[in-house]
Length: 444
Ligand SMILES: [Zn+2]
Image (cartoon, rainbow, N blue to C red; front, top):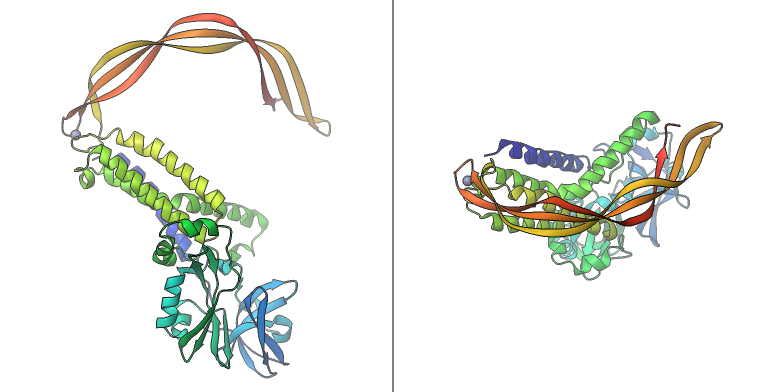
């Protein structure tokens, strides 16, 4: 057993796990259990924005009493609005100017509909299943509070805090649902929220299943970072910078949690001692791909652009495998699976061959161009561009192929490793060439 590796990879696992868990815990939108109450001084309208271009309203009378759930996001056309609930349970937006009666505005939490793109996600099938097996009130409880609730002649129309992946076009919607006597009557899909990843989510296999299986776990991380606002800039600016770094780590490395745990388990020898190193290599690569794939789907559904996520995850998988897994498994004893090291008992040169290559070395600077950068009279730095003469060589190397026999410190098993070394045996001059170089001098 090698405690060094267990600690190292176990540590990475725990760091990523901590960032992951904190991102989930930090994502709860808060609506007070005991929201502030107001009484309307004049009659006004309550708005339901079902979609970008589809708004309905109902009239409220002076003297109606409302619960104020949150500040709503304000746009230039809407002015400032509150998200409110009426006595009979309708939920919508009213103008702050119409509703305000001198209530302390800072008692009311922020509520930004745009940030709620990060709410609960699910597939279309799961959404239909829930809407047909549960009552609107049960769903309201289960899916946080519905953003809009409107009583109509034909029943009750609601827009829940859920985002639904429609597999046929791969886009994300916030559907508007109408119930009649507690059973589903109609669903209107409206405009998609996220369209840029659509073509990819449409073709990726199992994307609906992954979203349904994991939506609870990735819910959020989009909620307002209000707690920095009262602080001076020299606290909140570094605070935001730190949060962005943590967010990037979360975004691009969280999927490595399981592979890191896997490497720590390999170092423990026992869990995988029955697997040959070759099988374990493929197995690790498989785990890595599955984790990256699940993370890709979840990221795409969460509105992260495919043209950033796909290359970044690809590069991380490649680097992780080449520099970590491959080099790491090379140290594993093929007999007992121990990672505790081995000693060389024989090093034999099996073949010698010649290899030719070219090289060059600096001879002299032919010309120099200097650009001086100044602020006022003071020189800040100089950019120096040189044209140099180089000597070229033809080199001949002798390359030795080694077969190294090593012995496991744990079980005493012996196996062979192959590597090469080389030695310069001849160097001939082969003309000269002119090249350029540049550097910046800050000392002058
Ligand atoms: Zn061994």
